[in-house]
Image (tube, rainbow, N blue to C red; front, side):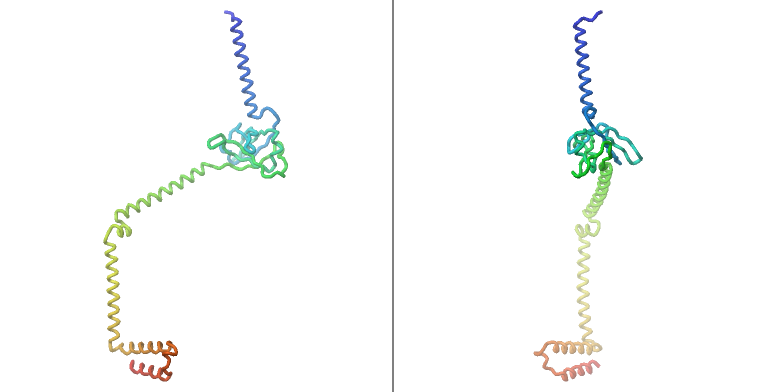
Length: 256
C-alpha cells in the first residue's frame, strides 16, 4: 500500500519537529554546560567534595558563570575538581580567589561558589589552580548532636530517678520533706546540745565554789579588775602603782 501525499506531509512535519526539538535540547544543554562561546578552565582540590557532581553550577558573586567539568580522585585524601568558566568573567576572578562547595538553597543541588578576596591581585590564569575551602562534614555534626542527645538523656534519667527517690521519701532530702524522723532527730540533737551547755555552766559554777580552786578564781577576778582599772584612763587610774602592787601581793597570798 502506497503512502498518500497527506501521510508523507504529516511524516515530514513530525520529522522536522523532532529535529527542531533535538537541536533545541542540544542548544540548551550545551549552553548550560558552557559548550558554546568562549570559556576558560580552572581547577581546585578538595578533601571532601560533599556530594558535588559533574554538571553542577559554578557561581561568582551569586551568578552562574560556569559548570563543573570533571571530578577526579588524585590521592587517598584528595579530589580534583575541574571547572569551565565563561570568558567574560575572567577579568574579575583573581589569583587569590577562593572556591567553596555549598548548596543551592537548603536542600538544593551542590554548587561551587567563587569569592575574590582583593581587587589588586592578578587575574587567575587559564588552567590555573584556585584556593579552596572544604565543605562542612554534616555527618560529623549529626554524630556530635546524637552524642549530646544521648548524654542529655542519661542526665534526664538520673534526675528522674532522684526526683522519684525524693517523692518516695528516700534519701536525706526525701526524709526531710516527707518524714518526721529527721526533723525529730534534729530537734533531739538541739535539745541535747542545750542540756549539755546548761550542765557545763553548772559544772563551772560548782568549780568556782570548790575550796581547791576558789583562790584561783579570786585571783583571776582581781587581776581582771586591776586590768580594767588601768585601761579605764584618768577617771579610774587614781590608784597608785604602790596600791596596785599591794593588791597583787594580797591576791597571791590569798591564792596560796
